[in-house]
Image 1 (tube, each protein chain N blue to C red):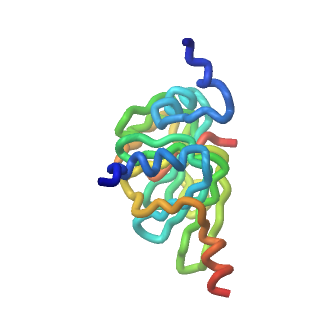
Image 2 (spheres, one colour):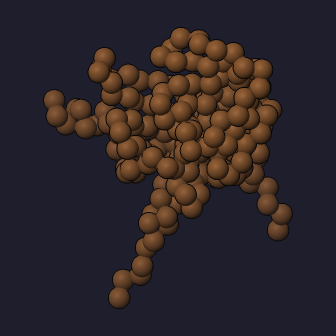
Length: 89
Length: 84
């Protein structure tokens, strides 16, 4: 039988690497994952915050953040929203 | 063997380590509503309840209020950023 892999172990493998975080609502963040806890709160570095508003898509750069895990919906390793857009083009 | 990795730039930094590191520094707190608070972090806890000093409240990019001291309840917090 294949060894079990817990969800948090999977995220632990992404520590030190770039990660794409999709939040509930129209927010996404891309940054280097420095650490994570059992609530999926995350420390991210060199972050780009994407926000989809009625005025369009806004980008914002942040050096280092502690992200609240409460509104996290999805974590993607090894891809960014920009990759997605170039695929669509 | 002694743990010496804590201060290297590549070290894993968990949320609790980050909390210890940013106390007393200027920070930006963004709430789920989009409102930002720029101030000096006096303390925070595991719920992300936050006490700020000399805080500016910024709504839609415009400064609305100034508080000498204020408390933010953790459930509203989207992120806490070390101000660059």
